[in-house]
Amino acid sequence: GIFFYAFQVATKASAFHSTIVYGKASYQATGRGFDIKHASLASTFQRYWYSHFCLGVELVLALSVYFAGSSFRDHNPARYFRHEIIPWFFVVALLWTPFLFNPEGFDYLRVVRGLGDWYQWLAARPNFDRPALQSLSAKQKDDKLQAESWEHWWRLTERAAQTRPIATRVWLLLLPRCRRLLLFWGFAQLSASASSSALFKYDASVAILVSLLLAVVLLAAIHYASFRNDQDDDDQVGSLHDAPRRRLRRFVAGALAVGAFGLTLLFKVFTPTAVVTLALATMTIAYCIVDALLVFSQTRVFPKDATGVPMVRKVAQAAHFLGGTLIFCPVVITAFLPWFADLQARCLWNVEFSSRLDVAKVFARQQARRKQAL
View 1 (spheres, helix red, strand yellow):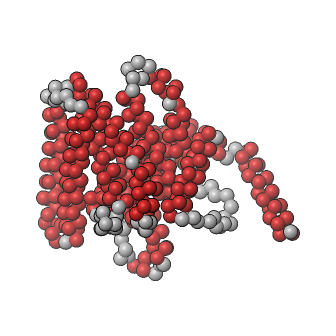
View 2: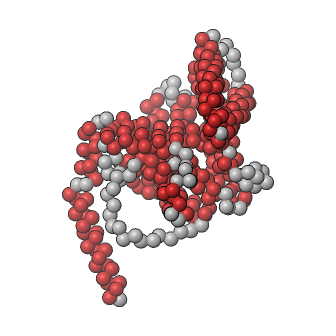
View 3: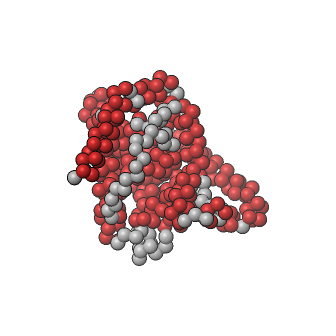
């Protein structure tokens, strides 16, 4: 009950925010009744990423940073969980309530098949030239492509905010996303504190500057690699001849990254904790930069459509991949337990629930008849 209530509160808050930003939409009855169909992982991700999952992932990172940087870690970890039990309950409600109330949401075969379909949906590119799409309307075509490709779903979602005035984007989109800067600051503080036991010691300001520099270099490298790949995909002949070179470039870049990381650990220039937290700070500030480009897309600040920039698409895709993996991993682990799926089925479809559902339908019909009589 507590998880469903917290999830419902987050749903209402998201509806209020969408009403303020995009405008109000009224409910339209479909007459379908009570639906007990299983929802796949891809459809669940599409429905709840922006409204629930994104906030839940940020809360997980914030609570983890607070635990790592607070004195509770060294003195009394039980005290930390005693004080922060309510935020962790809210995190569980945001991230895993849709799976608790999803019929057969923890069935092993369905979860594994759904995870594979989610990975395929995340990597698929939209194909607008298929003959099957030519006879469909614009809305039907968008719905079909959203179900098949993450890129099309993400572009439609982000482009909806680009129709709003610049003041609305700043106050209602950019400022709420500035909470990720607190995560960036927390990771920088953790990296600076972890460097106190290394040969090279630095403070938080140095960690912030290094993270910003690494983020700019990372975005530039992603932009160059994405531009080259898109150019090669447009030219099929060049793509065939240049494929070994692309593989060689990726292998060299990966080998250099792994070698640099191994050398830092080998010579104790940095501690492993300092390296990991600095990398997290770099990824966080890079995602913040991409978010700012999306908010200011098609304005004087950034005249181009940010959703069409390959670097922005790749960073957003990587962020959604990491967030979805964090969400789906506990679901996959729980699906290995055969008794949990049976427990979920018994809790959802017990006799009392079915009888209450039948009584509610009877009362609904009586109220409809009274309204017609009046």
